[in-house]
Length: 89
Image (cartoon, rainbow, N blue to C red; front, side, top):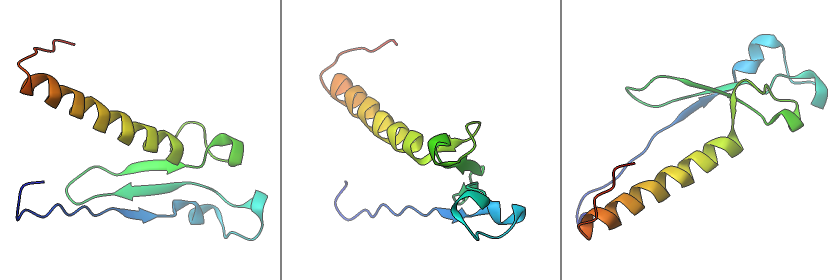
């Protein structure tokens, strides 16, 4: 982090499953939700299918892996370019 510069991140998460009815028991409620961040498209999500989620939507475990993978890739690219290694793919 550059000295004196703050990095602030904001995410809003809304349970969109409420549109299908209230959460009364474990089997009876939708796991769908939506993430939004200022100035960006909404990202719909759900629970993992093993936990009664919708397999067509990203689940939190996949998003965690995506975040870790993205950080690792960008760190690798930084290390390469800092050492004058050209990365083509």
